[in-house]
Image (cartoon, rainbow, N blue to C red; front, side, top):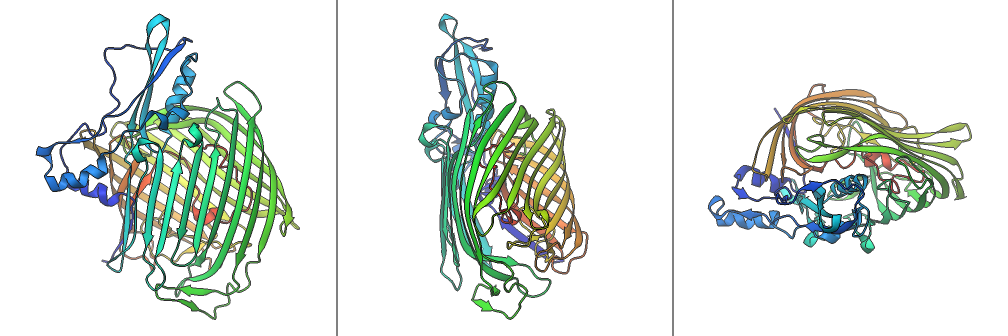
Length: 580
């Protein structure tokens, strides 16, 4: 039997270490302390005297429960300044002197839980003098160190280190390194600020000098987070210069050097001032340039090798375009707090109702002047014990022969949580495109969204559908510090060749078991070890496939795989609308 091990883990090593050693901890990211001497009350339209932010307690590691060498490891992982009030205040819908309403209180609580550095939050109204109310805000911090790495040929091939909530200020910073082998070493840095200029504004920056090529991504915006919001906007820039790889049935993958540069800007306004149904109207614009070399090469650790294979020669023409569009959105959502859906035991807010954003636009400059339509649609319904949701992103363009060049992705999922210890998830995911004007390829072995059990598979094409069934069993945790769980899963997926190079049509399926951990137990970040066995023969994916991963769950119902998002050309709406 042959084993395949894939590791992709910012924190998996740290979580695994603390899991195996099982230190005795006290006050490890305790739930926000509630003042039992103060009676919680309803807002009832009373005036707010003050909004009080209570910072979580620091993690305390008992000396008798952990030796000195272990405490030296745990302290940088678990200690840190608790989240400050200024890191959550911009998302509060209640302020000093405001009139307190239950709608604003519940929405404030939901928005705080949506922040990536907050695992859970509570916003309570308590009686105060002169018939007023005092708002008490308590939060539970999510795990913040970013520690990742990978091995290749028994040597360290990449590493990343950072913090997702530096000094409790709601700022992420991380640096990374990649071994270039025969090429230069790669270096990168990423940065995110979730309260830019003191408001609910998000700034993100990611730059990398890769061993071959480079990339820059920068954006600033205020997505439409809440029905109490009146405007939303986005400004972004991306440029990447590297190699797009195409898996072949035999031999090394072929690669073509590509350059993509794009700038986007969008603004939307809420048309109706009140009500639980929000209607938004806005405008979007983008400038884009794509270019691919005419000749294919083979990229190895030791060299870039020319090839005589002509399958990709002259396949992709240069594209230059300026696009403008009008976007219309409708949002009719309510939210329910649930536990143990995507996270192991953590809380999240699932959206019930409907949201849709549609852009109708046209190329007004450059080589591409075609009309396009993009739609992002979500619908969900359910309770804290059962829930079903569906989201899809669609794009079509008008060609000489009519509407075509479609790009689509989406997820349909059902969650069943009949007890505190059991969760079942059944889902169907689809990604695909009918375009052949941009370089892309979808693989079954994709580490993020592909089929477990098929690391190394060379099955690739232009359309893919995967069904998944997972049954989770939550085990008793260690204090409030560590959560455990076991899962069994069955997956099956189909691939269709479509129009991509070296596309093939086939079916694969697998079965497996998983170990899941979360630190702290309230965290929606889950580290997991998946052990999968392929049920359908694949000459390039034999034996047991072991993957160690770490992911931020419960913050997005569907996140489109990068393998298909690169095929999109329409102006995006996902950046000015916050999606469930």
